Image 1 (cartoon, one colour):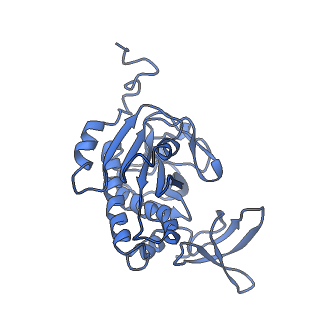
Image 2 (tube, one colour):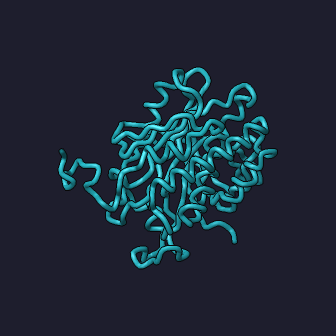
Image 3 (cartoon, helix red, strand yellow):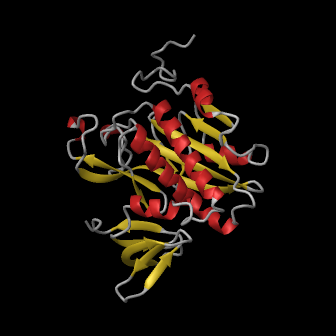
Amino acid sequence: MTPPDASDSRWSDLDRPPLNATALRRALLRPDALWTSLDVVTATGSTNSDLAAKADELGEGAVLVAEEQTAGRGRLDRRWSAPARSGLFFSVLLKPGASVPVERWGWLPLLTGVAVSTGLARAAGVDTALKWPNDLLVTIPKDSDKLRPGEAPIGDERKAGGILAERAGADGVVVGIGLNVTLRADELPVPGAGSLALAGAVSTDRDTLLRAVLRSLEQWYGSWREASGDPAASGLQEAYAKACATLGRTVRAELPGGQSVQGEAVAVDGDGRLVLATAEGVQRPVAAGDIVHLRPAAP
């Protein structure tokens, strides 16, 4: 038997207990639910890669969760890493089907952002803002170690999570979510990183948070699919705009190919593109790129 204080034991950090896979399945896998399977692994390279490799064998609604990712990926193949059991690292397999035109599938990462933000507001008591197109932001107070649970933070806006959607198999999309939950200040990988704990979350129970996020994702995905992927009819476009921290800011969009464009982010259009109003008076839609916030959002 592995001693509980061994470095590779699931119980080596009592502040970060392992997920309860049995309880999660009991709560989420129902005959009428979107989620059809849920597996928790101790460690893997990338849950997105693992789930994508089996996309044609699995039905819609498969969920793969890792206690630790050793080769987690963000946009542009950037690495995402964190200590074991310090966050939620999971992927879901979605198959929108013929009822949703393929050109609307690009809304899935934005939909996931809204779902995660909604779920965390309920379960963690943390307001999570969305940075277009795929970052989850929290506000970290200057003295985060002195923040009482539930206290509204005033301070720096930090990235606490990210979303990566990839086509998988013949008719699927794998959506991966990485979320820092209990990451401590001395564990932050870069100055711009944050976590729910540092933002004053009222709960950092990962089982509770994962259930809340998956239930929220099921609700938003169901409404979007029922509306044939129409972001306006499903309420998704409006909800994303309300939660988007990029809108109202002057930003620089660093585009593929080394080009960039600067302007005020004024809208997210029906195709999910960020619309910039440039100094020349031109409205420029941006479909992909890294966004740099240059000034705070307008009050």
